[in-house]
Image (spheres, rainbow, N blue to C red):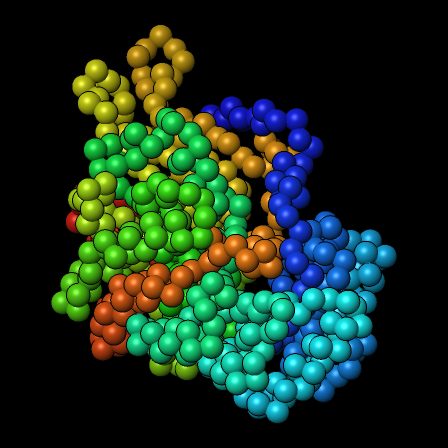
Length: 516
Ligand code: BG6
């Protein structure tokens, strides 16, 4: 059916940007990017910083210092950044871009060499003096994870973690550890040198507009919360599907797998925001306290139950959008006998008053037919006896679907009478889309998160205990999969929605995965 589109009641020409604009401007600061010549810096960090600068969200006294192993000078790095902005940036005529580039510098150095960090300290002082910037520094660790510890230690040993008369903060990219022990160890190293209020563990899903909207949707409206519990909710399905394969990241991905790469962090964050209790305030610890309680309340899936409560698979070659694509084992840098999962699904329960007995079905996969991230709340069936004979084969429960991407929005599915002389009912969908309602594209997640880190607001970042609790839940699953190797690994053709085996998880409750 054609869906009614909801409209925005405000008169603001650009509510999202306006929403950002009324925030305070951060202190003058220098952002240091470790791993400045890498892919993330080019695709996300530098374009986000430039967009913030173009939108006047940054103070005039501001600089970006790229730190990398490659030998180059400021101008050569500026050329690289210019190219990256052309390719991946959205905002900016050439004057704004050149203005931004004039604030960009480069420092060559190794990540494990203390002398190079001494040199970094001197360079920071020099730039700060030249540009009249107070000694505030945001260190962004955009390096492979094995460098996190040495960088943190070097920042600590050289005193860069505690500048005089200023602040130092550190943003740490994912993956934060690869199991409970390694995350715990990394947290300990971080805590030796930085206070928790200085640490910003990033999960870029928390910066996505519609992920933040989960909280608005739940707590700014009175109509949803009363039914947001086991009494009315039948099951919850969270899907993070991607059509991408390895895209040159085979080596990284093969050491991670989709559970470490997506589920333990992005997908779990979606679960937490969906399931958490209302926080006492919309501020750092209040929100994170509630999220952590959700993870703590997850019923553990112990080794013996892993096979029954989870499903995993690897894609084989297939057709995707009219193109034939190789299977996972034929991807570059992937060992031919790899047992790394490119698809994973789990049936989990939250043992608390709100959710006891409600299955949460989680799935994430690469090489699915298209990209889609959604949270679907399926409600219990109404007592349908009045319409039993007429509802035909299309019986589908009421559902509320939060589309995280690509079409950010919300949809509600309910029954309606089919026009005509008979009493026939059919499910229909009422849709709200960000694009059509607000008429703007939401800012990239990294823009929001970088701005928050510069403002010292950690609400959308993961706290030390939260990340460890997440690993505490996933580690037994990962260990059981590793022990089982190929046993229990199911193939699915690229361009399909994953292995048939995943059906087992919903079958146990006489439910079905949503067709996407
Ligand atoms: C990253 C993962 O964290 O998230 C990638 O490492 C994945 O494998 C990406 O493709 C997905 O992010 P987004 O924003 O495109 O959904």
